[in-house]
Length: 410
Image 1: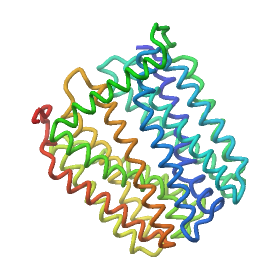
Image 2: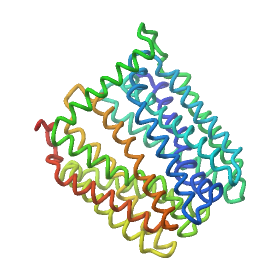
Image 3: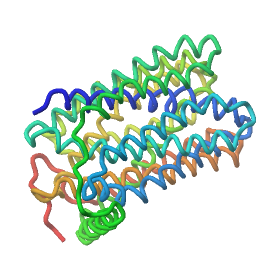
Image 4: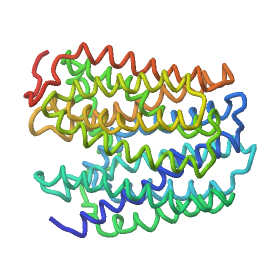
């Protein structure tokens, strides 16, 4: 195992977490919604939801094709570089956005998010190449942990700039952070191997293989029911992530410093929740853990509709964080029970496709309801609806017990 490649791969997660934390989760989200568009009538939520949904639609539709290029055409590293550069330059271009520049901001957000999320297709594909099978789980975990560190560091750098009103310096900082710490991956990860297949042919082959795997999964009744439940409740989870800072700023009046503090606290509670429920996932089975997490999130969404003060919202947000890590980890553990031995990459490719597709409907629904009612509170209940529907569907799925073998029922 090449330690330089492992470190470089983990550092890429450290790098891109600056985008996830500062741009999507906390600072730019609020700046675009409230400062560029204006959110008194919910128009900011509407435009932000459109931008995220469109970008994720593009990524989800193209990812099987792009994955085929990565797998069969030997273009993995070059495409990772192209997508990373696209995201970095788009974020740097945020400096050109001024209040009222709604369309320019929309275009740059879509482009940046495509660069970020599309690049992860190639980044994830390096894991089996750089780590032996028996080390892939821990290497993946190292990347996840290093990514949290990147989120925290980038937010701590952005905090004094945001508090002093120097937002025009935040976007170049994120672009530079992303560029510097992604450089080792672009230098030291395995080189692209020349192959005879053209990128287009490889893309078609990858797309056909992804469709065949998806068709195979959908022909299995319990797997089909699970994927439908996952698609719906994960849409609720993604919508919370995408709009949480806007909700805190618009409805509850959080300033930039308070938003960053809230986000950091939620990250801590998410890690605590994932740790506390890791053993019960094995003992009780992942299905029970996911059900409990969805019940928690449903109660949180309903409670958020009624709360009025910042301290109350702090309690709600931190409680939600307890279910964030557990619902993600439990869902992934549940899905492994449907995966035949030796076909992990194919099946988790479909799993990723469904996960990315689940960030399309929720943000659109939230933005439309917020705009229609000129209030975010009714939109909060739409999130609860995603959790309830997904929960009802998941309860009907057989399996998910402790240490259960792969499900083979039709």
